[in-house]
Image 1 (cartoon, rainbow, N blue to C red):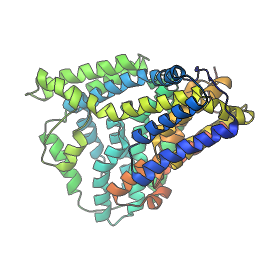
Image 2: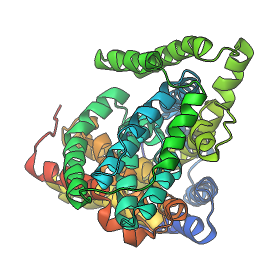
Image 3: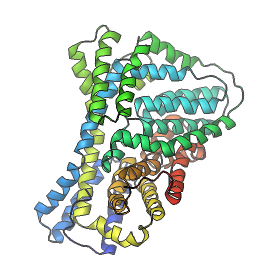
Image 4: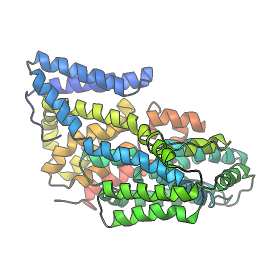
Length: 459
């Protein structure tokens, strides 16, 4: 998108005013009226079209700006299709249920907060959804914590930290795919590069949760045992169900393209599904890949955890990406983002200030708009030219987008994730916020790297 040419050159104040109006309008709609982000973004596009026409910009140029912006997201949309099919096929083959079962095997009364953190991280990594992890396994841990008479805010902090670790690092995650797509970085190269900041944050958070955990705790773990028993009874837990994951790991390690890697992950799991589920048919496979996996176990929490995936489940994310990138295309075509960048360019010639500006923008959009997708999309498109001018590889930017974008949204009380998590866990955002160690550490570590130059890759 940064290759687009601006057709007009607005003043800095004019560009700033338009930006404030757009972001203010989007954030007000989402926070005040609980609107899905698609509608306020559409109105923002309409506003920019009117502005462009008042500036005597041709309709053809405005349409081209939108199309060029949306066109840059086609690669991600293809990946979103594959991710949806991968999730549903991994459910049917037992790959994800087996991961969940193995994760629950770790749970006992010792080092409770640390184990909650690790287990939710594994589950989040395996299903690629922080909110689903928190709403299922997370709710179960809150119940156990209450029975043990332990701190609910610390437990919630451990759940959210683990869930967003999984969301950030999973190739199944829409935010992970989105961050790599916005700046055109290979998905698995992006995940590999994130380890520089994610692993230290994970280790420090794990130590903190271990230190804060009670040395011993004893209570009924009936609910978690029931989860494991249900997964077993559904015949979804098998050692060979992990074959698609191993294949995915090997292909990713060999740096095979994400589309080919995910395709083989889908194909191998579909073959396994015919062995895992005796009644599995070609017709069921077609429905599975589009509509997602469906099962009725009789346990609502298990059904909520497993009934997901399919192409259809990705439509929300894909439509938002198209609209947001179309908006970004107009912002470039009308010279608004170039005008803002020119105003702060004197501060961006040094890498530390560039990292500080990028982190601040990603966090600021999260707090202003309350939406992590927009934080990734707007920040990525805004600072991509600056990172190129500084001679930095784009994987540095995609990492910052996750470190300061993805993991910050649950810390915003009026953010989409913050509202959802408060509702399902029953713990106020400001209560659990001090204990979301992983989420708090990620932007700090990425800033330290930016100022020190450590793990910063140049062209």
